[in-house]
Image (cartoon, rainbow, N blue to C red; front, top):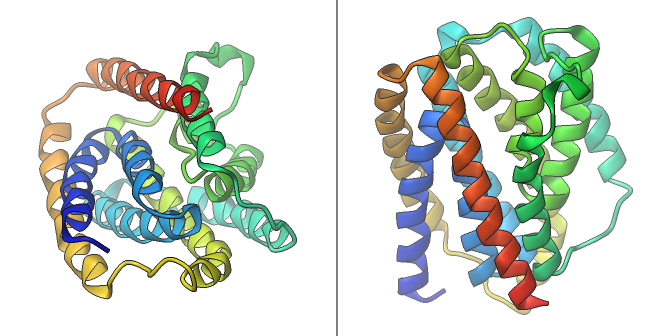
Length: 248
């Protein structure tokens, strides 16, 4: 892999980790869009999964006092069901279709929340979140805006939202890594995989970006948090829809 592309990935990792450190999502969308532009889809899924797993894990650790473990257990049960089902699915989306997914998923944030009546703090909703989010995250690469639907009507504070989103996303990315490992190995026969040192370098960069974003989160109020998040993911979605049209 050329050095300029590696430098691009690492710079994007820092910037997107900073964004996700503030909003608990959005960064993963941008990183996925960059990765599928420079490498095969299967390898992009693995690189994205590893980077995001560490980013979300570190973010969850920094906010560990705000994690609701009962919620995590229920979500994990749903994610396990999704994992078993995905083992029987063999499908690799084209890049233009993947950009279409990346563009449409953020638009879910504009759907009327009262239409869903979802609250991840409820048992069945947590199970459903694990099933849907882990499944979609594995197929499309990201699912942050969908996960947001399960959090927006909860009574959680912004720190509780980011902490629990981070832990659930850690689980979702772990599922994605396991499912895409086989296709990534097959793709490596034609396209050399990213070097190991890319992952080793990306991990501390991810942790730095997450920590910096967390400092901003601490000084933001709950009203601005939700307003900025909505417009940010919408702008990202518009860019990716344009990219999908261009590739078509």
